[in-house]
Length: 178
Image 1 (tube, one colour):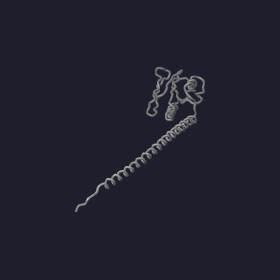
Image 2 (tube, rainbow, N blue to C red):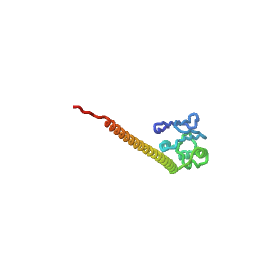
Image 3 (cartoon, rainbow, N blue to C red):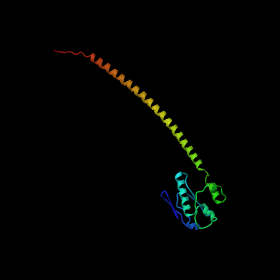
Image 4 (tube, one colour):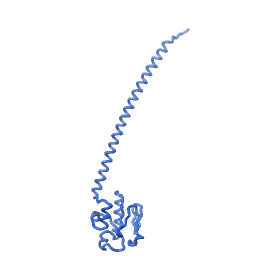
């Protein structure tokens, strides 16, 4: 049995009880406790969708949680599902592992966390923009001061040159010979 998620082939070896053959090729955390294989997915919506696709694959094959319960948690088949609140709260190795290694959060909790992170990022960026704008204004002011100073210097230069030229020209007497 196998399932393909975003270009990653997940090959599930049959005969789950043969521990040497228990393998799951997937990016994530793998841990085996009492012949239960836990696959940890990273926390983002794309991976969550992949996890649901993973579960849908098992559902199509008839190997999800309800089927596992119907078989009294026994059999050579491999069952798979995305853990939910009841799994988190249950007694036994599944609940214990989930409580030790994960957080129980609703979609609303995750959306709220993401909104909070986004708000913090926006506030930080707005503050950065304000600082940058203040710096730009200071640079503009400095540039205007320098331009005004340069304009004044150029005007003084022109006046000095004009006075020099007037004095230079008046000191010469032109004689015209006919």
